[in-house]
Image (cartoon, rainbow, N blue to C red):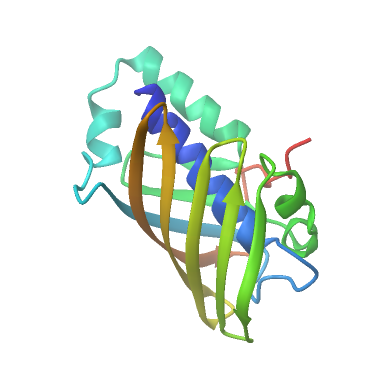
Length: 180
C-alpha cells in the first residue's frame, strides 16, 4: 500500500477516534465490536477502492498492511469494511483528544444525537471539520472535511464513515488503545 494511503488510513482513524473519545462526554454508542464502512474523496476524486488495492497487493504486503492495521485495533478483510473494538474505557477517556498525534477537537454543538466540531492535528498538518449523527446506540454516521499539507501541496479530503454495532464481544479484534 502506498505510504500516503497508509498514512491517510491512520490519520482518518486517529481523527475519528479523537473525536469520538474527546472531552468528558463519551460517544453515545455501545462498547463492543463495530463494523465500519468508510468512503472518501481527495481533491474531488474518489480514490481506488481499498478492497481493490488490497487484492492487488502481494501476499507479503497485504500481511504487513493487515498487521499494521491490527496494531491500531482495526481488522480488515479486503471487503471495503473494517471491524473495530471500542471498550467502555476508551469511549469514556479524553486521552484520544489530547494524545492522538497532538490532535485537539473543539465542539460547536453537542447534543445527545448530534455533534459538530473542528479538529486540529498540528503534527500531522491536518485541520478538519466534522459532524456525527447518533440515531441510536448501535449506529452512527461521521462526516468530515479536512485539509492536509504534504510539502507544498494541499489535499482536500471528505470522508463519510458509518458504524454499525455487531456485538458486545469483540472476539479476535483487539480493543482500540489511546496512543502513548
